[in-house]
Structure formats: structure tokens, C-alpha cells
Amino acid sequence: MRSKRQNALPGFGLTLGYTIAYLSLIALIPLSTLPLKVAGMGWTQFWGTIFEPRVLAAFELSVGASFAGALVDAVFGLLVAWTLVRYSLPGKDILDSIVDLPFALPTSVAGIALTAIYSENGWIGRLAAPLGIRIAYTPLGVVVALAFIGLPFVVRTVQPVLDDMEDEFEEAAATLGASRLQTFVRVTAPALMPAAITGFALAFARALGEYGSVVFISGNMPMRTEVVPLLIMTKLEEFDYQGAAAVALVMLIASFMMLLTVNLLQRWSSTRDALG
Image (cartoon, rainbow, N blue to C red):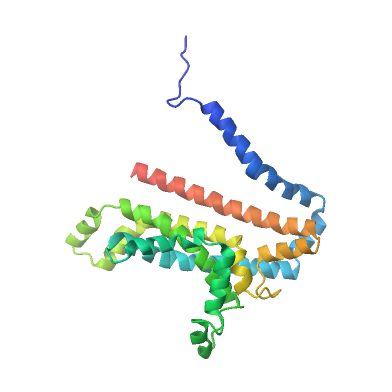
């Protein structure tokens, strides 16, 4: 008689049931109201809402600024993670804690602080103004805010990989005559690339839905500095619930696709490490 296979850890059915119930109550059921709300619009009204010039301008700004902010985080987040892992410096623990500040700081507080610093009367804004560079109340200010909130995602994704990376490969490359640049490009960078891409995708997905830190520094000018989350809030205030749901549904699909990409990248990276 064929014996029943036993799990090493008991309680799988119970924990799976709790997991599905919790995710359903917290995420699946609330998010399912968006397609249901949009279903009453009809395709003509839905596409008409999505392709309004104001909505398209908001999508263009949100996606473009999110991509630019995540790209900045991918570069400087890698440098920050490298510094924290590879060097011993005074106040290292303080710097390590500052990286997580955007996680703990209320986004509205971050928005007020960034606006005060980067406005034309701020510490940094007054230095950029004579050069003809305006930061606050421009798309550039939106990029700055999104880069601020996305930095921890890149640092905390790359940092564990650097911690686990063995020094022997870099030492072997140096022994064979490779320069520091060649060692980084051919040895270090390929090992960091999956983590860097994952951090970039996480920062990008987080920036797509950012509201609090952007609402102050952007100036909220339609067709110029209005991001999608602010547009959704505006439609809700105008009692255009179906229009807000239509825009939110597009953002939901975009965010889900980004997070799905992140999971696939992490699985690919784990599979490659297991095989290699």
C-alpha cells in the first residue's frame, strides 16, 4: 500500500487557509471593487476616460518621473550600498539608519521638507536658481521626491548581495592583472546586476503610486506637474468615482506587472545561483 507523504512541517492546510483568508480580506476583495466599478462604464467611456489629455499627461509624468527617479536610485543606491559594505568609516551605523528614513518618515513630512529645501528660497533651490534651474513646482521636483522615497529599495536589495559576495574572485582577477575597473565590470557587476535590477523595479513600482511626498513639491498643475495619484484624488473630490476607478485600475495593472517582474527576476537569480 502506498504510504502517504508527510510534510516536514505540519499544519500546511491550516496555514494556507489563514493565508488565503487574510490576503482576501486585506487585498483581493478590496481591489476587486475596481474592476467591478469600471465594469459599469462600458468600453467606450472607459477608453474615453483613459485617453483624456489630462489623464495622458498625468500618466506620462508619473511613468517618466518614476523611471528617472528609479534610475537615479539604481546608480546612487549601488554606490551607497557599496560604501556601507566595503568601507569602515565614522558614523557608519548612523548612515545605515538614514537610508531607511524614507520608510519610517511620513511622506507628507518628506514632501514639506523637500519643498522647503528645493524651492527658490530654500538652501539648495537658491543655489540652483541663478543657473536657471527650478526644482520645486516642476517635473524635476517630482523626480527628486520619487528618488528620495525609492532609494532604500535599491540599497537594501543590493546590500545583502555585497555582504555575501566572496572576495576571492576579485582577488583572483587582480592577481591575473585586471585593473579595478575591469574587475568591477567583469566580476562584480554581473553578480550585482540581478539585485540592482530588482531594486530598480521595486523603486519604480513604489514611485508609481507615491502621493504624499509629491503633492507639495509638484505644485499640482494640470497638464504639467499633476501625477496620477493626485488626479485620482481630484476625480474623487469631483464625485467622478467611475473615472477615478478607471485610472486606478490602469495603475493597479501597471504596479502588478512590475511586482510580477520583480518576483520573476528574484526566481531567476535564485535559480542561477543554485545552478552556478
